[in-house]
Length: 314
Image (cartoon, rainbow, N blue to C red; front, side, top):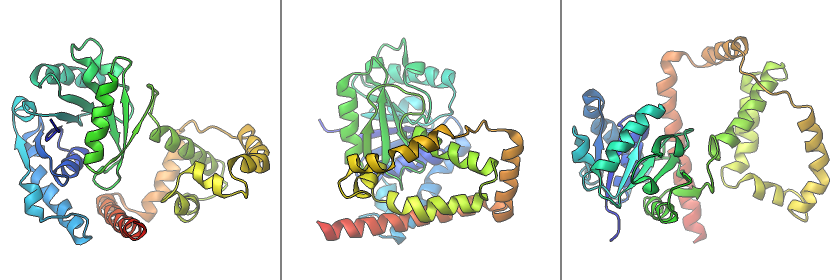
């Protein structure tokens, strides 16, 4: 039987975005949060985000129809009783996740998938010893998953192949772009790639090679122009007449030289304080949420553009 019911545990920014992802794809969603205050604000916030999506023509039906598929539940048991997949979004605390997954294993159907949105904790750290551990995995999204479709699927050593394949099918039905991490690694794929770039950017900033604004420009108006529609391997494949092997022959020595002289960034407080001061001069702290909303609307515009381009290529 095809999965229909989703439980979202945690109604913060990520949890609300997951509710949108699933509900606008036709799933019935139940949301639970231990905080009644957070839970009470979930539906109004979700409706506001859906209104934004509608303004970019990124949903296929009225906002009310999507919201009608989302129910808030004060009881964890009520939220997960009929779930085909549970998407957990609580704090990045191993003990808290372990306690929750023990409860989820007890309260859910035996074949329900139990997925964590954790951005850094391997599933093995909080699912070992659980009777139904074979159905547990990480499903790490990008913030917010309602606008950035990547989701990284990574099981523990005891997660079954069927679990990963079933999860992948559900996320694909929900319009996401799942990738499978073949074995556990700290940070999974996205944060390791992002971390390598961030480490070098911070190191260059610390050594005084450029301002924070100019380093942002290098990515935004340089690398990201290509990376918004192709990855690094396809990029280098197209940047030499005969592809990847030709690129490596031409530029491999340069990259080896760069790597040998690279200075790792150790996250010293004085450099981070300097960076924060530079950023606050550009964006006062009280305007961060406003700028985040601006970012989300730019992502919506990009999604709309990509959809139109893909429709034209079909």
